[in-house]
Length: 68
Image (cartoon, rainbow, N blue to C red; front, side, top):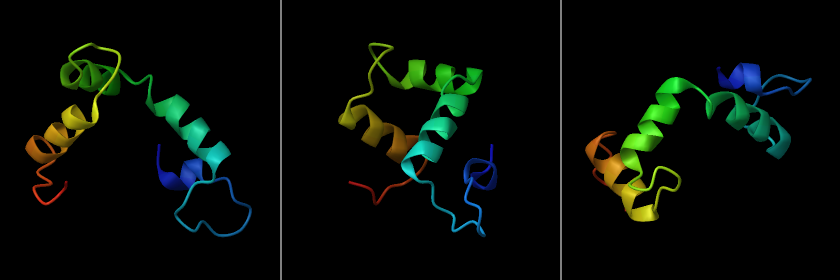
């Protein structure tokens, strides 16, 4: 799903989602198998990703070395 599909603005898309659009986007993306699998792999509990786990994932898998 692209941001153009999620951005339901009547006017030209500004590239941002308002709250309601974000909720629709999240609900569509969160149930995708690859996202569920990724979440399970990153989360030690399988239910929650701690800030530390997210930071570790962003640095190691997304190669965002300057993130803190």
